[in-house]
Image (cartoon, rainbow, N blue to C red; front, side):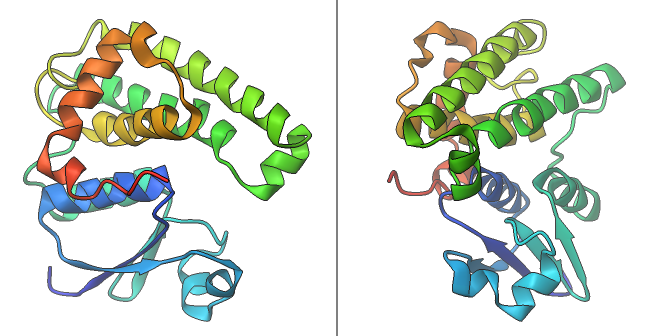
Length: 207
């Protein structure tokens, strides 16, 4: 890359981890800036990069990008090899559907933050809420994978679908103690990917 990248992220954020896996796959060097508390969220450089005050945010030269899917697509377009999307239109659509199921139907409903916890009525109710949405999403993903999976979500090649699925799987197991044995296809794929260097080298420490 001709201009250095800066990634604003958080070690507990599955959205940040997705982007770090993509950067590792692409072999792109970047400055890793941790956003960990309110003081950082009021930092002018971060606010400029992320008006929503959410992570991840990627700065590349004079441009900044938010939302993990958009960032991963940008990385794939500026450095196409190795690709994060399959070639066939059907498989591209299946990849997007799996990724969006994680991004839209699971992750937002289990993201532990003060706003969501207070909205659902406290920690105990939040835990029930989060587990409901995790199971609902994982059950759907397990069905969706039947038509496409090999070692990874789409045949044997890592795609954006795996980059979204694996952090969510890891989060469900280690943060919410979800029994994933009922999702054998998804679990096998996730455990396979976790052994791959781009996933293992960027994996956040278990809290």
